[in-house]
Length: 287
Length: 81
Image (cartoon, rainbow over all chains, first blue to last red; front, side, top):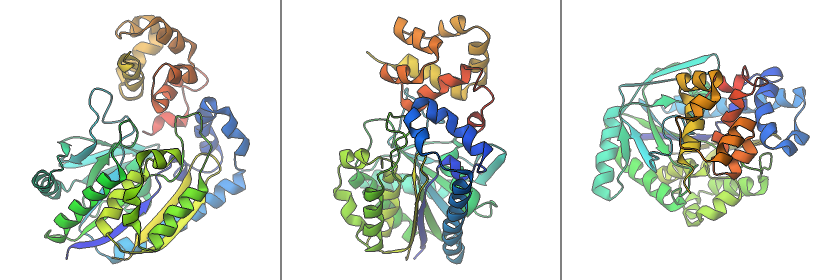
């Protein structure tokens, strides 16, 4: 068996910004969009505690990832108008580049791309009735770089970015994302290298919406409880509307990882609402 | 009515450095490259992301109109994608 690890983590940009000036400057833009969100702005001390708590969560996930000794890391994330615009928005996209690069403020990222595994997933998808879009160039963005900064800061192994459209309606159903995860698991189980998967995003938040600042912590806690019980499969029954109402459209990225782990229980979960925009969530599954 | 050109202008502000330079240099001329309604043009000139969203811009693209606002032109937000 070559599927060795599955983790999921938030990619909120403020996780990687320095508490204080950087965080506050960044959030000024969101507050211009939704002034009411500024009312819950955390103090510097609260920002620093959030950063420490996020670093602890990422450290736990990184330890599990490194213990599994993966040779390629699939990164399931959503594009936020970096690679895809309204002339062409793929529902699912597999990257076939030789290498992938990106930048987040002063942090630069460059990885080899696991394109051979990508081609195998594409082919398996076509055979199974899941027709991915694909391409030979993408630019990494915060949906990948924020978690990778903490989980794979040195490019020791290739990554394979796979995109899910979680932002531009119509978005795929949780069931379809689960099926994509099942397909990835099937390919990974027969793959010659040790394969790990990282899903990013969420949890509850309403970017670009009048609801910026709202965080449905109850829904998030419910999701994490279901994952701890090993009942992630049941989340495929959720409708897109239920997911979006809670501000959890990026949970669709997680649904791909959930499809890949099947009935495995979450080994560890972490959750911290940032009091600004997003419920930060982190999971490592026991494979 | 499609908001394609509105979203395209905002996407270009985000991703295309030359488009951004054109917009900061001569906004009227830059906007002339897109098929925008009078309301869309006015909202861009007002730099109002909430109005742009009401006109059909994606909320996270509407934000990029603030790149044209001198108050925000050096904001750290633009150094990440």
